[in-house]
Length: 110
Image (cartoon, rainbow, N blue to C red; front, side, top):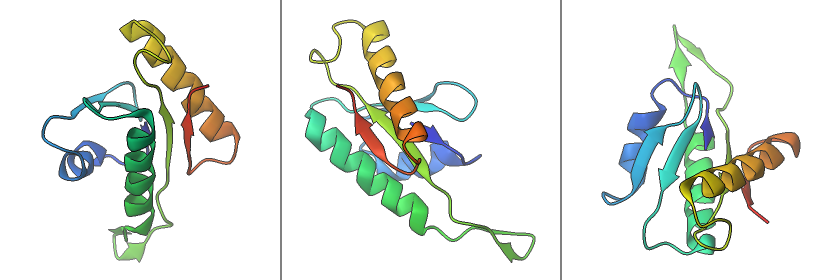
């Protein structure tokens, strides 16, 4: 998940379930593991998260900032990979597709 928020991890902890695993995966990127979720359930959750972030109102020094957006890539075990490395690579490729296709969207690996 590419999330452009310095407080992104706190926002994510309030949105995802207690059993979900959220970790920073680079400067502005996070990985979210959704155990017991299907590929489509994960994509739906990410779309809901994107909507919630987009609807946030962020005020900095008295000025309302432009809306924040999220681009995401979703990969499922074992369909898109049977190892952590393969899953992360598939999710990263899907994320790249989301970014190059206009951002603010969720792409499921193919």
